Amino acid sequence: MNNPVVLITGVLTGIGRATAVAFAKESAKLVVTARRRHDDEVRDLVDRTVARFGRLDIGVNNPGTEGKSRPVTKSVALELAKPGIRMNAVAPGRRAPVCLW
Image (tube, rainbow, N blue to C red):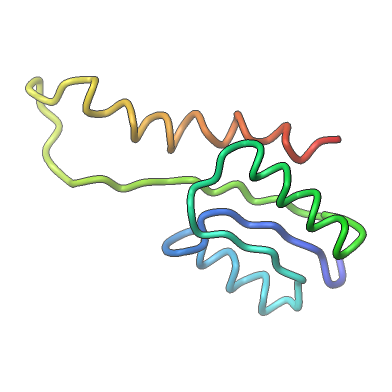
């Protein structure tokens, strides 16, 4: 695909940043965001991308959080893990339909 229009969330560090750099090297037209966004904000970003470029070829939903590293033991309550699980495992699937219209 020549010059794809790519929307990437979570580009501040790690996988998101590396993905953005890789697409930039391939001459992609990038729309990026680094901060967490609500579903309606993501939908607006998709709409603005399509309005600007006439299309959206690739969407990379890359939410994530590292949190504080510590050994996982019985003393680590599930309640402490829920925010990370929600962000890293649940959010990508919830946001995928936003790009389908």
